[in-house]
Image 1 (cartoon, helix red, strand yellow):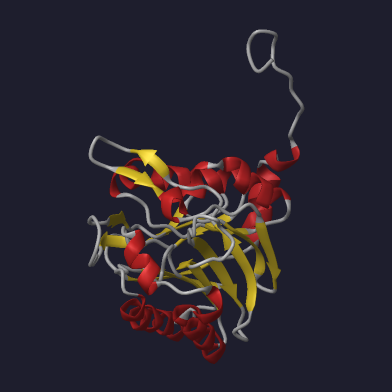
Image 2 (image 1 turned 180 degrees about the vertical axis):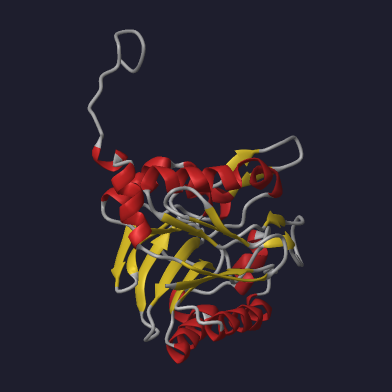
Length: 283
């Protein structure tokens, strides 16, 4: 199967980001991609909740979702919209959803996944993030069984929670999608090694389209992201790296590699129960 990772440098105006995203998707399809993936917050990279409140939409009337569904149908491709920032009506604090969509070649929504783990961190004295101030977390794991493979859906900070990926793999995932807008600091330190680890642990292909560069932010503090959209094979090899500029990375994958990797090291079937030693763990 031919796959394309779209690397974006989205700003905070969704209608300005949309034609750029569409052009890259069309480029990927023209190069033969059957499955195209875009990054986290494809529609809007913003650091201002007030700005987001003005420019974001609910799922049912989001222009990016509507247009990209049309594009997928017109091209006859599978499309992962890595995530969209969307308004919700299900949170008492009015927080947004960070929602990934798997779109089928008929333009239908095959699966939705709301990011479970929120990026609430203190990276340094000058870089602090509180994603949960603006976004409410999801609480459901999603595995989509499709004609192109069993696809487990995650988003960005979920990468640091191996139990999530293991659960997807044990349910049959062959591909795990990991769209992201990773910090340059944590990206340089952890991005490649964590993606390789998740692939090795699960025996899955890990497909991780990413945001990159200095983002055009009209309100709020500046935002930079790491880039390096990656594809990692089930044995842990990096088979594509998108570098640091916007663009499209094309690669071919063979899902038989999943079975081969798991046959060599069948760790998904080797779980054993264990107990804490007295005084050495939870009481």
